[in-house]
Length: 364
Image 1 (tube, rainbow, N blue to C red):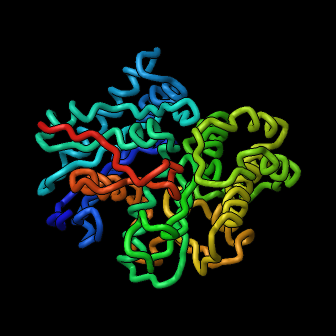
Image 2 (cartoon, rainbow, N blue to C red; image 1 turned 120 degrees about the vertical axis):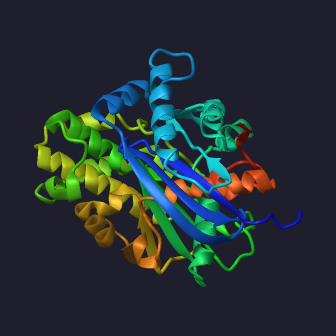
């Protein structure tokens, strides 16, 4: 296949931590990143978060799903209307439910509607094809992470950790020629990250998050609960593997007897311990773990990671990237891959049998 010309792509992400919508432009051909462009953020209101939260765990046609989709579409249309000068949109939507074992995944939001509203082609529904072909449908950022490693001219294996509602990690050997090459990538969900901490703060204190990890830093970790959490089967399963936001919801009730600070500290330690457990599956050791996503702003979580991992733990800004926008940029990059006819996942990222492409293209 001939080389595609560079496109200016506008990627979006609305994560399971429900903070808001990220949007970011980059110029790329779906294989190499040429440059990064403008970016913006649109927070969800408390009412919007409540509507989205009510849709978690639900499938198309169920009560509350249409209302959640409307919130997603409205927020994206408002944010994306601020941008100009782009050729293509990569629209992830909002994951409401994810059950790859049953061959299904659900991201709310209609790409056809956005294409008509914004007058630009939209690539969306990135996960369904992978799941239909027997893959986990997640994580999908690894092919972009591979391009990031090459953009920073890395010459040794490294890992990129995204701490959103759920944590996911990509182990990368940037010396390989393409992300789908054997041995280039290993990617999987590490375990819970911000979601249970945010839910705890909302439930107990009416706050969206533990800002900076201040509450967790004031608490004491219940190490027995951390160890009990890691004893669950998921953490001993060979990757690739993926999680739904609420896969461990029943376990969190065990923190009910803890004080607010101790519960926050314990959930924070669990998130970090999951990453340390995940590192045991890396094909080779890494010298550095670059951290993206909202969790890198949590000082207590970053300290737990540094204490539990044998490598340098650094926010991804240390390598010249914007950790708040990495996921949005990833779906812009993947959109460019879709229009170029390139694969977006492979056996070592989602467990799908062969390297395949995903995504629908809606034109205005």
